[in-house]
Length: 374
Image (cartoon, rainbow, N blue to C red; front, top):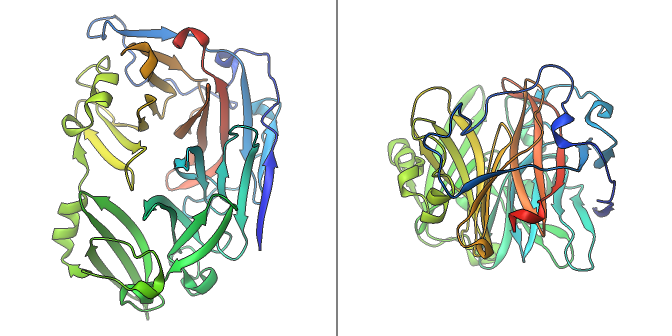
């Protein structure tokens, strides 16, 4: 049964963002922070931000918190089983989040309010892997971890790819493993669009034996009845070579320019979304020290990047290339920022509490982008 809940993004907090932390010592490593201005891009300017709304996830939905200290503790679960932001993208012009175990949250647009779109036959039973675009439609990859759950109890029709209809906020199963020529128990643990081809990795475990199948194909059929064309199995080596992250030097020029102020020795990995891409792409820059993970957006309207430590780089097209660096609130040790969307003049940043492969609390931070940035 599908359920859509309106979300009241209207709780005003008057405290400064810099004063917030989720209890305990604050997380201090900063992407691009340095003791001097050496190496800084002359076009990059630090900008203070103030005012925030905090939200957290439960097994049933999204809830507002007066401050982070009021967010209830969550039992740590493997990240495949936890309620957390799994991906983001723009759906028909609306910035949206894919939330594991819940559904898709669309942000407020025009006269419409933010909403959480749920499908009880799909999400509670499966891990939501990622969002994709194909044939002008929005698709969700679903799977179950055989190590932490029973893969035989997957969602509706054992779907590994579901279609989301934005106009109605509804979901429907599109493809199952058998449509890929595999057994019904196979799980789609990875799906990537690289260049002109799709690459999928399926894991099948039975009788204590684990098998992986790697597939390459040019397109995802719009309907199950259309069948696959050009699908073929490839070796593990060819698959790994095909989906290896790109070097940051090959990233879109707009993104390279955006992050030019970060010292060249700082290593990072960025999952990059674009308005035209069918799937997010990952770019990696090597360097010295611990790699910082982040998420980035490149579109005609803006380019932005958020790192796990809260360093946010932003450049609207209207500013003619000026880059602003905003620092989101410092989170407690063990908490990180993971993804974001820009809705109008607001940033919605996903955060979560991490412990090795497990996730505890998770939710969203909403802040307004300062007027001077524009």
